[in-house]
Figure 1: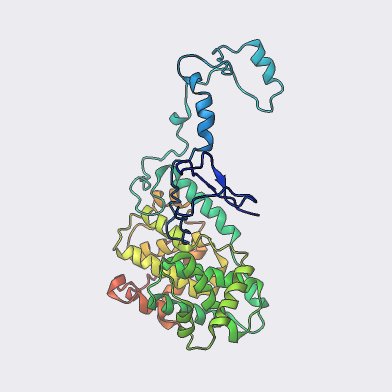
Figure 2: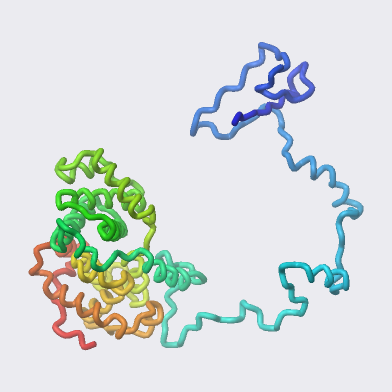
Length: 391
């Protein structure tokens, strides 16, 4: 395909019309006229041309200009408001069925489809998160709950793995917590990484010597997707103590993307957690928020919890356990309304998270506990777990 560029030379002496650059017989031009400079890529993108160029639609506007000033055009037909027989007959063959009857007195603006009861607090009008548009917040949440079903890993994929087990996966996730904290990555990056790992292992059998390579490549993909300034490949090679080369990391990254079919924009527990904390009326720097985040990240270490429940269920159960720990109301009508879960729906997940929380100090993986032990997160990992949930 050849690209032809038209240049306006109407202002140049000896040229009364445009010439086409690239013709077999170009018109002779004055050699003293400087040639236009070639535009540098990503440099001057204004495409300035000497003289004025006529837009393609201007000629059509000038042709029918008289029709808009002074008299009506013969081609413009004015229909009356009443449906005539000619119009009705022409509508019979139309694929669209039009209703010529007037609309009802109740317009759609007056119909409230999302009625909020008096005991339910409206959280969408003052939301500082992604759900800060009241008109779409409910639809966004419903879409995420449907989309999470599409990107769930297989529950029993670990049974089909020959060379790795649940304990090795827990060690890998615990190490990735330290990596994300070292490079100050967005929490969403870590949750996406865990999702990529589980979905990849659901389809591919991996040797234990390559498991860390899979985790590193998945975090590289998540960083490129979520972070503004993601770590470079050399930094991921460095954190593995040069166990793998940059070429191996890039090859595994390509394999991960092909296996995931490039579906990397997936809802995670973090997406639902932010909304449920708003329903729980949790402040930005509150123990309730930090403790819920701690329980949600701690649940990723447990293979049974992470693979057995949806991200939205884990988020709701984490908030409930945090409420119980801080002696707050377990599950308010507002939280049930916006989450779509009742206490009965999440009871089993709540019990497993509570058990994991109670035994957190005895786990071999302590990266999450050390992370939330700092004053930055309110030292919530040191809070004792409640003995009874009273569900």
